[in-house]
Length: 461
Image (tube, rainbow, N blue to C red; front, side, top):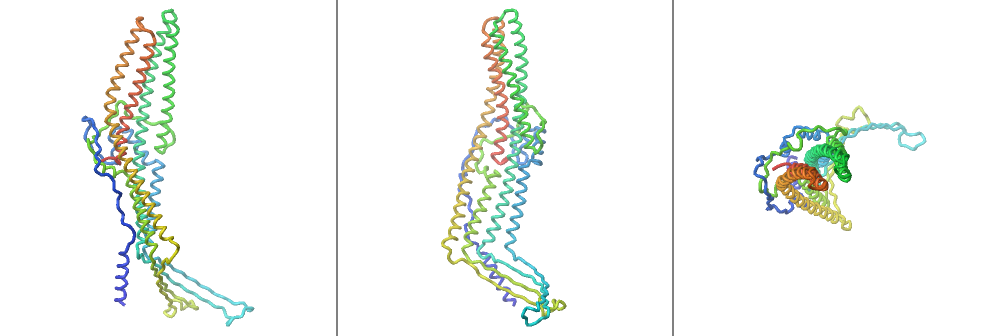
């Protein structure tokens, strides 16, 4: 008996080592690419983890908003629920590797009709209690491939949640900086309104006394009205942006608290002059998709294993008796054991086509992963370019604002002294407002470019 058990163990150990299907191999991707850009030397050197990179902006209100979003955002909560679903599915598939046990009990009493022919007219009683075992021995790895596919799907769900979390942080920060930009543009516009109102009063008084033509008065009125129009447009955008940010926070639409104004926002970060492209692999969206490839690779293995026979063991042990009082006695013992081998013979190529279907699906996953990887390199390169050029552009844009402000002052003096027409003042007013608004937008884009860098690298390096 002991020899028999040892042989069974050896047999099962041998067959369990058989696992048909392809081994997973990562796609061949360009890994020698170096991402280089010129970065300002004044930035402070700091390498951060994905969970901490938002603190580089040193705005306590922004950090609090991000924390609120991570706790309340509905898309993130849905992603976390998907993780729990995937974990449950993994446990469900993993259980198939082990025997299943069942039980049954039955008590039956039959009384025959006097109008039915029977050997006995006495009632017949019967009781039984039994336990059963059923086990499909995973000879070729079909169940292990199924378990591994479920595990990869679970890991993919976890990385997808990480990607959603990273995107959520980036989106909250981007919308927040957009809100600060709108606040700044509203401030610029209101200052412009005050200046133009004062100047319109002067021109209107001159027109009253006949010192300037009505055309100058009307042009000045138009400039004032244009500034008012800008003001109302920006107010609408601010309200819309606040509502959008509220939804990201998982809150009803409401007014959003502000921290540091746009001009006081700084970023404490250092970006090396050269970054290896392999860092892109740390992006959670790429990791999530690679786990999907692993799952599909295991489904190819499942399809291959289905072409081979399956081996199933089943058994039953219990008690059966016509007399309930002796049901558990040795004489009532009943048992059975069986083993079966089942496999396909010929089904017009269906099993072969199943393997081909899963293989071609795997190829599609591989090509999509390569496309995502190349797009990730493009995103990183663009973000590095934006960061480097925005900083230099701001220097010149600020110089333009100062020059436009001084030009407007001089043109007003020339107009007041009768050396030029009001058209020159009108053009310079438009130039100044346009330059100030563009500078505000540029400051916003500069801050968002750092968000894009950290997001494109998966949250840090």
